[in-house]
Image 1: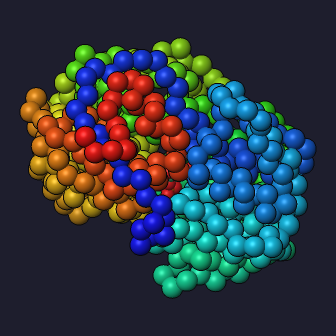
Image 2: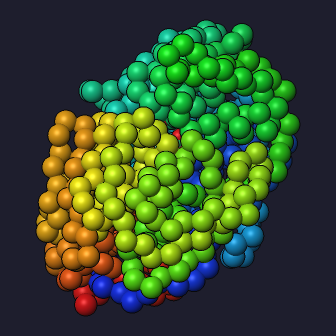
Length: 455
Ligand code: S3P
């Protein structure tokens, strides 16, 4: 245990030979949370294949069970496990008799607040050390306008007690931050609200909720608004029908073996069945601009989401300027992009990163501190990050990175360790379970050297 109240598992990664193989990564985290929620809000049995069985998603599954839905885990192991959700229908959830612990999951916490905001039940949301530091007013403000009564710890943080309203009001919410979690919370609240609930986003964020809501039969429309904004509207009280959902592999998880392959000499990798929703593929665009050899093969549609296989080869990358407008489509990929930039030729500048400050950790600070400690020159300038790449030279490494209960910081620096002179350690690899169970085995199966014992 550490002061954050969690069990830690240090991990070490060392310079590796070529990475080779053909893999699948675990299911998309965003879609997995939403598929469970949609199943719980639909009367009847929804089936989910490819669900991410990571801690974040399992927290959402447990929460929905506390709220009266049934989530049935399939027997056995393996890739083709089919989860079943027996839902209670819109407005049909019941009050939980205990606190709802959302662990490390901002997505689960925020989406579920939307779900319970328009039902007359009281829910107490708690979370771990990291989640309890994250801003929640972005979600509680619109939900209060819809009629929910919400008592938060100072600064609008968890724990939060939310009493939903029996008489919700439809709102038109102009989102102050680019956040799919905020949009989705309002859309889920809008399901049990009369009339039309509307969210206006200055830049469109991931639309997995919209796609799944439509898949289940809700009337959701997405329209362009003034100045490049997007209006998303939902009609209350739709007739939802249970569905089969196929969750594609998570592009945010694929990012780690993908960047590892680019950075390791003589490496070739195929990642099958990855979700390539255009609102999520900013990393692929950026890496291609940097000269990465990435081919998108066998593009197809699966359950309303575009899916493809990614074929990747080692590539010497060159620096780029990443515009702020790309941030919503690669918000979770900046830590691993910064690792790629550290080994690129030239100076990469990434703009518009303010939201990185409020992720599972302050990712802007964590990336800058970690890279500096590994011998890479970086600068933070307001909300932009500059990384001076080492080109063919290898960063020194030889240090332990503080992960601050952040899975993506842990995985990013383990990838950097594969290309450093000396091994890189992370203080806690256990947190990787939140989004990428099996990460170490999968990477080592490709030829990486990630160990629990120091080298
Ligand atoms: C997510 C949205 C993003 C992302 C998170 C998952 C989602 O967060 O960082 O990992 O599933 O809606 P924001 O909505 O806060 O940008």
